Image (tube, helix red, strand yellow):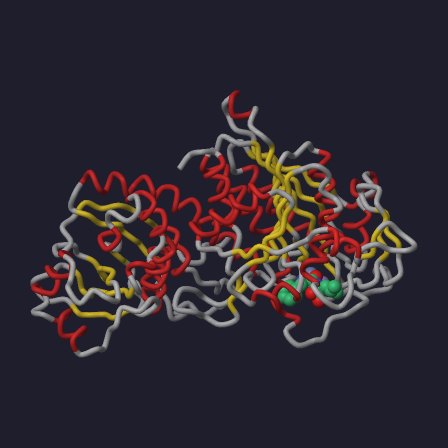
Length: 512
Ligand code: BES
Ligand code: MN
Ligand code: ZN
């Protein structure tokens, strides 16, 4: 893959004021009329510029807002960036992450190439230093991310590369920062990898291409193997759901299976966690075709699958002591003479039959096979992630993913991981009332429910395929993209799910 912006992260033992850099970044809480020690020192060296900025009311330290001051001969930095952190009592690890993202985003915009973060100073004592460093690293990757691999202009209004240093004069502190930075780098890079793959359009990525990318990833990763089921194997295995959805396209469907096995014997006895991700490389709706406005966004209908792919990359690099399966059903949903139709009855891999009443409800069709496959592989825990329903977007908007499931403990663990990773979720129901709506008179199930509660009926449909496994489902329609750029992020794919799933797995492995 062509490198979009090469970001390199390091720790550096250096005095804050002496640090030679393009931008020195410090944080400020909104009630911080009294400056902390570092800000006081910088204020003194900048002849009171920080105090004047605050007293004039130009900078209120709100979250997502930054102010740039220019250096002088008293300090090493060319610029000092003050990043607003909002109210101190509301601060979380995501405040750290967003502040770093905000600073990195701005740095790339003004074409800086060396960024020095001293954000941890504002949070000292509130969180562990290594956790702060991890959040800073994830944020630095997130905010500096750009997708412009098809822009042929070389000067594209951004830095060519970016070096980010986490700085502190105390070597004991840089050592702790280094620990978190290592993890944050793995996760941050994996998320950027996910965003680039998701942002690539459907004429570039189709199911066979995605399968080739997964193969390549496994070849380059230790402890990761990849198996692909092509059309022939899908037929042999009776994976009717994936085949039906893929039947209208020239690009044939695939089931991508990534298997991560830990090195140690003890770890290999750990439970099997399956991550299952929807990868529709383009969703036109099929014969039940979608309206044309915003149909271009349906290139992002592969985001769930790509989050799984990128999480597997992170899991392998983190060498977690867990057994993790990544299962990615992939198809292109197009209308043609060979497409599946409304009214068709499909026999899925589980043996259950489904009456298709809308070909645009295709995500659940491919997931039914993938979930049943996860069960067949004796997965103890199954988590699926999918841009599944517009209804979830109607229910929750674009800030939180819908979280469904059949196991309270798993749901709580995912809620905790969501809080720490800043990829937010909200619990939703999928019990039998919703399940009743998915029964058909002429098959075991139908693929759409009634008019209301579409996210819940879709989840209730998936629930029929998970057997006795502990299961959770993340509906990420809406959170999969930024329609416009934000203070923290470039427009397009958000890479949602990579931080959440990686955090969940790190916690599960007990390697805090
Ligand atoms: N991929 C879409 C869901 C979606 C919509 C994701 C908007 C992101 C933004 C999914 O395949 C779909 O089309 N769902 C239908 C289901 C319906 C036919 C029961 C929907 O939500 O309208
Ligand atoms: Mn659809
Ligand atoms: Zn879809």
